Length: 84
Image 1 (cartoon, rainbow, N blue to C red):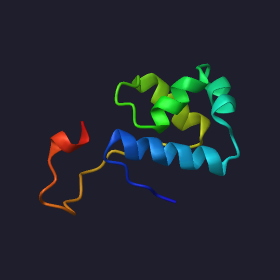
Image 2 (tube, rainbow, N blue to C red):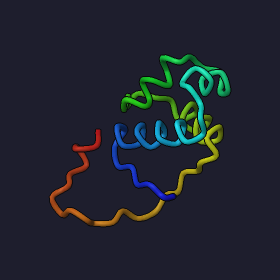
Image 3 (cartoon, helix red, strand yellow):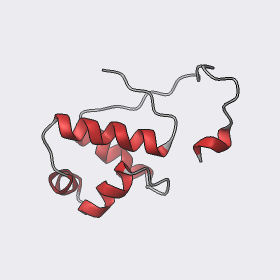
């Protein structure tokens, strides 16, 4: 399944959904990547101040990858500031 995420909140929700699909608790996922459960909770709730290194560790632990591609223009009124 492909999911689009255009904000930290959407990215966190996608990670939370994948974690649940894999049957992992926040604590179990945190142990896999060497961080704390609170960090996982913050990311899943859309914390924009997450280290890239942590995000890539999460993606790897959840068997996900990040793909960079040109943005679709589904809503011409969208502003970059809406995603910060």
